[in-house]
Image 1: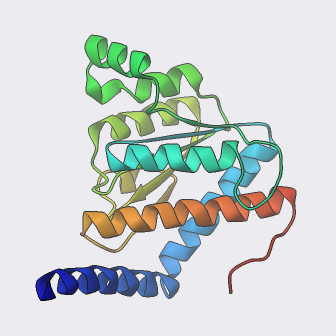
Image 2 (image 1 turned 60 degrees about the vertical axis):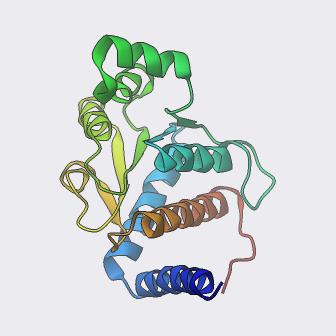
Length: 200
């Protein structure tokens, strides 16, 4: 029991320490602001948001898309956000015909348009299918946002805005990714539809 309690406390402690570090991180705060502004601009211009990731990051992309399409804090119209991780027929047909590296890039080419925004989520920043998606976005003149971990990986060199979580621990990075998604949703919703009571 004592070892279990130690694991629980250690996990909470490392999560709190990372979040405390972010409060004072100029680069992190600046990139989150830039990402929020890019998404606000896209929605104001009747563009859409595309999101993708693998594994837990696929779940995060779907979670964030749902917050925009449905609601976050406010009762308001839905916003056009699409997770490219949900259609098994599309994913498996592309994977079968072109390889798993192309499962997001092909969708970007089919569904994306100039002025849209794409969020790619990868703890390492090196997921090949996301790298290919960022390249496709460049062809389509789609604004790219990366959510990644320490160093940024290859994504850091390819995306327009890179939100880097300064950690090498996958669970801690993923926790901050969904926190970041929630922060961006809050900012975008407030800017487009009016203010709500913000956390202090």
